[in-house]
Image (cartoon, rainbow, N blue to C red; front, top):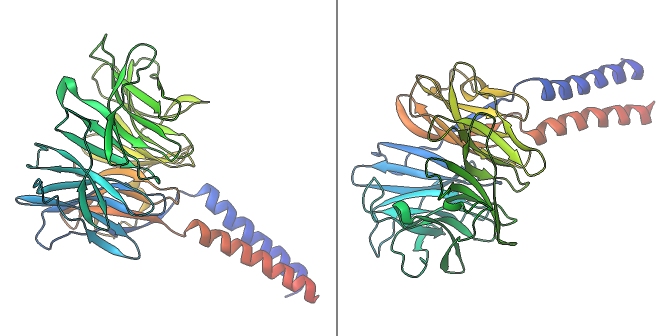
Length: 377
């Protein structure tokens, strides 16, 4: 083949690779995270760090265990808190160092809950603010600063756990709304969660709190709604959650400080939903509702049913049950949630294929071939 023909063919291949990467729906390899103990009833996936460490819980009669999981290392169990004894544990957040935070309780329903941090698989209770006896931890950033809540009912408040002690987030928005539960924190110290308007208890307030400037503000609501829940914040500042009218069903959204709140289109055949995780590229995941739970992916333009992005012969049901979810997405595109695998409820991890680095390497290889042949001609 002549160099000219080779160059034309190679450029065509490179362009087709790039075009496919841009135009085609993303595809994934699905991994079964499995069970901590062979006889466990099931497992759930709740969070993935930006470099791919997953956490959640594995459930059994009489107890549950938090875990961490990676593609390379597999499943690692986290010990339950021994003193005071909390036999029911759940991992809610994890950072790139593999530090997991979550909650320990005395029952499967969360009784007597305490905030826990796991380092090297060993559980340590996080310090509660003075006078508080209950708490939970929902997320942790790269600086091992964790967030969650303390108290319960009308006396529940968002909390920060840092340096071995806990503190209540008391800063309010301009109308007096305050954080009841903090769900996520990024590496810049932005914290998001569910707020309460003391003047209208029927309204949910999605709040962003900046721990560096000690300021708080609402993400607002879409037209026709009056409230929101904010579930996750990326390192780039994207916030996702659900917006609703009073306590009604929700619509997923993505919010930025510059662009405000934008509606995420629901997957076909669903009527409500919530976005639960977002990465620094603005890709979001969540779960929508019809007769079944429908996990979805939003890539900034399009919304996909996650069931359509995996091999249909994989043994996974992500569209005809009420247990499925998509809860978190990493900056590398790994998606974590729960589905039904061969009839049992299991946590999953979806890893992009071909991985973005592999696609780029393929295109670069084609261009390198062109350059080599040009030098030889």
